[in-house]
Image (cartoon, rainbow, N blue to C red; front, top):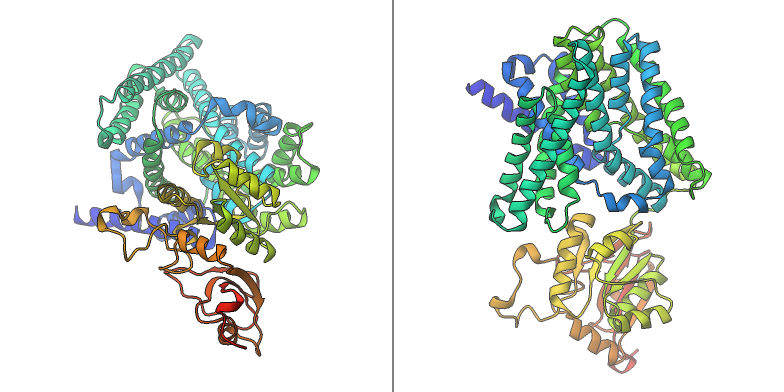
Length: 598
């Protein structure tokens, strides 16, 4: 038992290291997780999931897949479907059907699988999924239209593809066991009804606040697992359909606050994905069955060079996308969580039915996953640049606030070559900014409206500079997850030395103070009104930062520094900049009468 506990703990630790490595090198985590599982399992012989978990392996995989499918379907919103464009609608409807059929044909003729297993292979591998699309988009950084199309395709097709795979699997099971068509329909009806009823029951308790907030995540977890288990008990193998329908229904109900539930499920999914991928990859047989490697590589080539380009061309025909954008979309389609997890789950069941070729399903799916992730991660960014649909590095700055101080800071950054957007809910300030020719967004940047309409393409930092302390804190908390904790700053609205402890924010609401600890919004506004100016100067070997201070005085406040390569450095209480020759410095300098004599 001690060895079992140590092995499980080490597996979780390796999963974390794989996720961390993926974050460091900006590649999908699934790649490192699968490689870790292969090294630990078939190559190293350290991890044997069947011996480790024994009869618990199948229930653990089943419950984990149920939670993953629920989390994926929970993100699907019906009201977004009319707004995501003709291209996305084509990709997730008839484009997905074409992909299923073509992938099934490829699996049948190239790998020799039966038509039943081939169609299941096509249903499993037609999906992309946000777990692999999101990190790839962060690396590729295509323009807004391409990024939105791929992101929405992954979100929408994930639960729909999983649902289709479940239906294909149920058809296989009904046929193998000699069930009538009515039994297959009963599976669909039972899973749908139990999923809808569980979603309605959970929403009923949540709306009426009959479950305390700290137990809502627990209650949702229990409801998902109960719906899965009860549906399977009522009608064999209908549980996955039930949790998928439950997630879609719960995510589209009005008056149900699911943001915290979704956050919890995302964190839980990260843990499950990390463990599940390692376990499933460790179950791969090595060496692979005869012919599987070459047939898998052949299917990968067909999927990458024939199936995806053809389906993308047909699905995006007549859309507003340019041929360059359609070309990149036709190249990017990495397979992810649904393909890996559900294929292993179905293979475990199909092998018990004695279906020919069922043991080839998992290695073929994993070859396609590894191939698409590796190839597209390495080539998508250069392809996007060659097609001229790649956005520059996320060096843009979102400034919350549009009063005089915020406008002058924004103008200095724009003159230095950075993309800046001013966001504010004060129409008077936004109107003045627009008259000055500054890019603006009318509204608070942390609202649901901003989530749909504020273009953050190329944005990498937030400067919260409004006169409202509470709204600044809200913006910082919201964008901390979007940009990262070290790229969110706030201009103080009060002197921290004079502020009473009872009125200061807690640590989780704080962000580094802009410019200096003693620089407040009131002090900056007063200095600008008194004639202080924001000056940009390129330093040289003969006119360095000490010479700059000597010329403009020791009261000069350094705001930003731009390195020779164009990287922006923000002066804050956490980071004291030391400008070097070649830097462009942006500083607040006093008027002539306050400067030292020449």
